[in-house]
Amino acid sequence: MEKVLGNNVTYAYQEELLGTGHTVMQAIPYLENKKGKVVILYGDVPIVREETLKKLIEKSIKEKEYATVLTAIVPNPTGYGRIIRDDTTRIKEIVEERDANSEQRKITEINSGLYCFDIEELVKALGKLTNNNSQGEYYLTDVIKIMNQKGLKVGAMIVEDKTEILGVNDRAQLEMLTRLLRIRINQEHMKNGVTIEDTNNTYIYDDVKIGVDTVIHPNTTIKSGVVIGENCEIGPNAYIREGCNIADNVKIGSFVEVKKAVIGEGTKVPHLSYMGDCEIGKKTNIGCGTITCNYDGFKKSKTIIGDGAFVGSNVNFIAPVEIGDNTIIAAGSTITDDVPKDSLSIARQRQTNKKDWNKK
Image 1: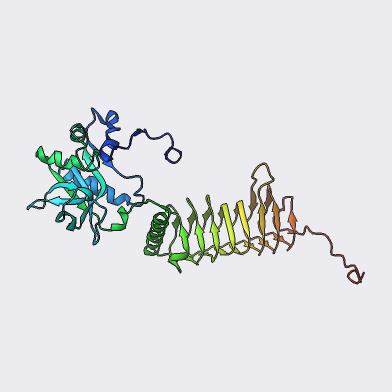
Image 2: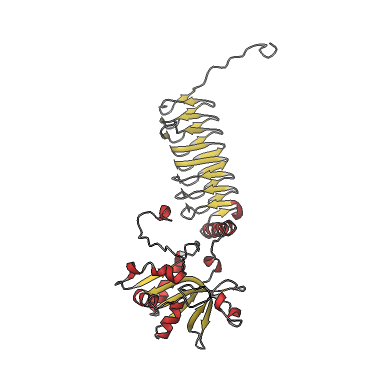
């Protein structure tokens, strides 16, 4: 986790695994003498929406609740703690399944394990936790009962999309949640006017921006940080990697890989090409099989191609190299030097035919 979050957060370590309440106790030194709200999340519940957490916090503040629990109604609550309400529908306590009686196990409102607490009252309640239960653990859920006994207001917010609180315990569940997240991201783009022909076979990272009326064909991957304009056509079998900024009316065709590329409006990269570490101007055509040779074994270098260029098939650009506006690059050329604007560049050996060579 530290590799992912880096040094921008403070870490507390639980040396012994003595329950969820004991886990939160490890944070007491960082919570003491502080006021306000603290949100508690599970690290293995990865696809809860930011909007859901904002609503949870807003409800807790607006309704002056000392604890606000995110809950869900599920048809099969097996394995989850049950939400116990009184006759006024107020939450009395949360009972873990292993400690629940037969009637309590019939309850279908379950605890997600996500909370918003008043910091001061949480710290006080943590000091009163005991491990008097079937597992001999300190349950964070017992904090709810402790707050109720003090007459403090405890509330709940039922999550609209139950998939948000699903957890990951093995690789099969990880794949399932990845699939759910992929569909969620794709649906959001489609609501915003993007056509995705096959949501099951399109992989778009969550911070990608795509303009309206762009079409994404199947088996396309678009990685983190990519920006794609309007009326573009991407794929099929395209791989748009990090650091790409693609303008309006651009075509990225089949079996094309693009990485750290800025591509101007109306440019076409139709098929079987690699465009890495490059800038391509407006209304340029990149022929089939063209690659930017951006890595010499030691460092990455950039290829710059101007506006209105026409690049024939099977061209190699040996970076660093700059191609001017309105140039024509002959098919099969390996370009090692800059090409001035309005030029035709041919960089290939003259054809030689050896008569009767094959007979010999």
